[in-house]
Length: 375
Image (cartoon, rainbow, N blue to C red; front, side, top):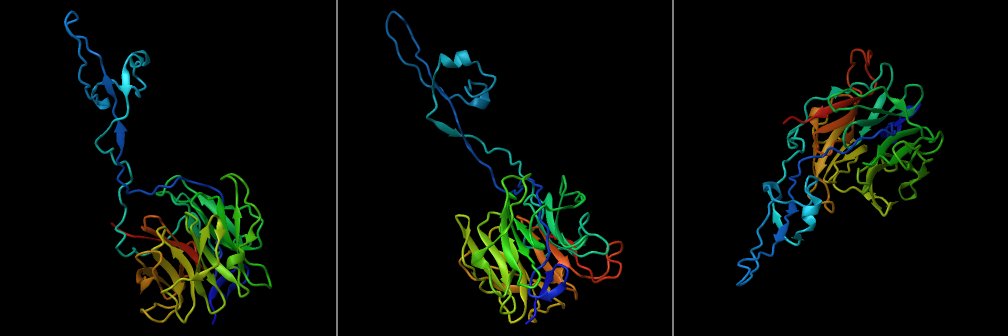
């Protein structure tokens, strides 16, 4: 059976895959929510106290000196090094201090709530083109995507804050054959992508670079996931532990490949989500416990075209279960997920929904959309 897939220059074709962009700007990971507690060494000072010189001598008690309470702290940049040298400082004792202030960002959504209605991503979509399959750095400051503007290429754009629009996209400098569907590691030094040579099945390749300003190495095919019928729609977890992808033969089966010591292992079926229809575009949360994907399956009250679905599991060894249509994300047009934020609050998707003034005057083009969960 046929699976809708982006093949650059050919529009929708049998298979499953979508063009995407990838590039080289970076940001720092801004995950939050951990309670940072710590234990800090407290110096004890042993003083030999001489009392009544003509009769006896004794050793005085060892008073506890709290660094924050005005005592001597040998580690303080304002302490007198000479005075510290005259003291017998014993640092084999630790006393828990109060928890450090929580400087992490406050929770921005309730991850158990449904997403709000998607809105068009600003700064990356262009009138008269198809823009799709956006993937972001963990801090959401760098975006990679595919577009058929000026021929099919990968693009990258950056921004200084998540409250801002992305700046002007730039072409990713990579020597690949009609690349699409990029997915990058959290450190943005590994890029997995789909190559779309004319006349032969599409397949998945990997490229690396030595730094964020270096050029991407020529991509090489990932042998253990290559399939004669074609493999596409790669999604690499940020920690480079698993690669999810679609195998075309059999109508579009979602697979997973564990990455061990930098090597991609042979793929296996992702259990619990397969249907008799076309399944594609897997997107998995960083904890590997929730999966979003696109499917034309008929159960679960689909809205038409290809909808976005979601399922969960309790641990990685389990099968996914509770397959549900993410109705708030779908329309009668075709939708597919492309990226989920580390906290699960923001989902990027590709949609061919109704016309948008200034971007898609006639309707039918595909563009990048964003859905956010409320608090």
